[in-house]
Image (cartoon, helix red, strand yellow):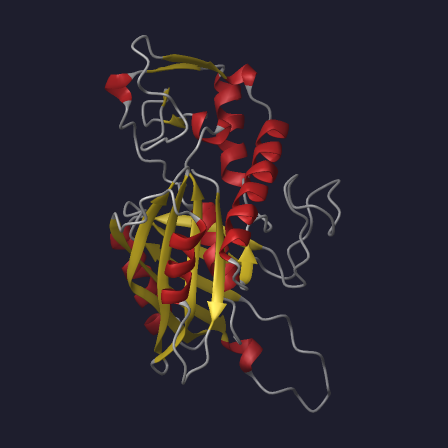
Length: 313
């Protein structure tokens, strides 16, 4: 799972978006790079809100409960699964020895006043079926607030970064342009990318598309779970966030940022815990370059997209 940062540049309904400006500044800021499109990408986000939070306040002036949300997100660069991000029940008791406030993980503190969110990934076929279930069978309890899409984004490689640009268009309830999304993905050496994913047979192997592993070595790479600690993951997220912010600063643009938000890195840490618990080692060589798809890959960037696309809900 590569480390990413996402920026959103809003636009007014009657004005053009910042897409062309970002593209021009990208070329101007990196004159030694061949800034040419290498592909396309797409995004679709659907937001549902519980209907209880939409009811008018009662005559007793009782404070309404915190609204609950359910977000469905699909990304073309993670085609093996869709993402569902759901509010936890507000009355869920805290775990033993767990305080209700403080850091969600070692990467970022949780400053959100709303109940924490739970991330789930499901296959594409089930993704569409589940959304239909909530919009039809559960319509009295959930309201479809809006659908956003990036229908035809552009992908660039810039040094050790991969940049995805695209205009965000709202399709439900009314059609309008909301702004421009910029995803900046670190493609350089990465401890996070070196952590193998669990296979169905219980063994561990390389992550499909792991950009941080040198697969050119003829003898393969021997990686030990004992060589990586959770503190190494925290440190890498923090260091890479600084690199992403430096990259963004060179563009001279203003936008809403989502990098070290609550929850990022949690799936990577869980993968590391499972690997350590199994006491496993893995030899990653040329024949295993493709690896197996990680069912949690892209969870970090999915959170980031959902964070910056938090409009008036």
